[in-house]
Length: 512
Image (tube, rainbow, N blue to C red; front, side):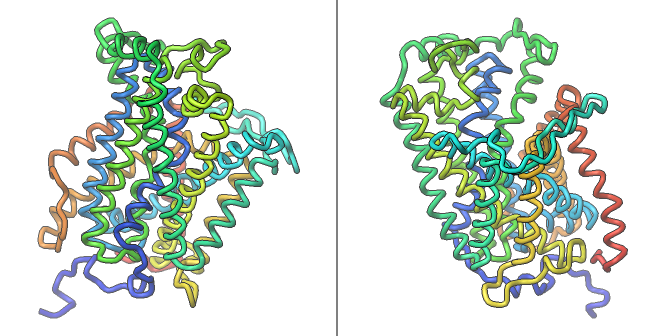
């Protein structure tokens, strides 16, 4: 049969991007990329907000368990797509091949505009914030060049603006970090992977140290009694949640969905390894394995950390308390729960020790995000859906230099604008939408390409992926109802990509 009439499976078609890129990531580097991209500063702080919303030790743990279940199921599902289509761009490619170029573009558009760059900006500025624990002159209020105070703009339930634009000693350090890591990643994927390996090992060791010290050395009998003797508090028929105006078991489901925004964000970015699939050795084996191993290990550490918090600090606290014990998990100073635990163990030096751990974590996290994100824009450029220059590789190091540069410039603008904090509030809704669409794409490809080579098949298909879709849809619907100020802006950002896609695709012939 001639090639004109024989149907070809998209992932079997040779592409220049797969031939140009250097296969420099083995199983270890792929796994540390998953873990390093996931572990940022979220695990050290978001439990305070979850505790305030749930007012229950059991619901704090359940929120993390549900996040863990969803993350691992999604990672196992993505493993099939990654082994089937080991292309640079990862999730962008899966959406393009299963649902069409528009959906792939909308994901890449949102990733560039908000998801990846906003996260890199936030982690970079967090690096400066925690360095300020040791050097007080590094502060968001210590301005080098203050350009403008944007007033709050109220649009229905949304509040936009209300941010300071300019350069201060905190965000300038974030910008320096972002530029430095971008330059490092120009010098080959192996160089970026080496940095990733070193810092991921260091921050996993820091988390293991926190878990070991908390469970063995710093167990607080009063906190253990308060938290575990009343472990199921506020979970029965009489449970009340004023923030969503609901009581009873329905209220329990809704409040866990709302409270999960923090834990889902802290566990996000596990999919970044798929962006680098074109540079992974033996991808049909290493991509599914790295997704499962990396996501599973991090989720295990996260849940263990939350048990440590409950063993050292009482969940319920007083916002006006004068000690870390009195403030509890709910009202840990600036939500820094892990810092409060370290202060119980090491006294005043605990804050410095934890700041150093978070600095290591932030550095490694941003390296992974910068390395991976540029590969998506590179793949989009190859399809004619991004700046053409982003599709060029460095002649010597074979890295997407221009894609790294464009990502760096936009991220630094977000740092200066002060808007990254609001953008991060908006993205978890959009992130879940694209996870849902990608896993729907798994079902679509099983139907439209039944004979495609699948070196790995998603464990639990179709039941587990279907459960994920239902759970993620429930969370998104709840967030639309109870957190409209965070969800509608994210949806609007995604929808704004539709006219951009049609304008861009008219300039270049987009592959069907």
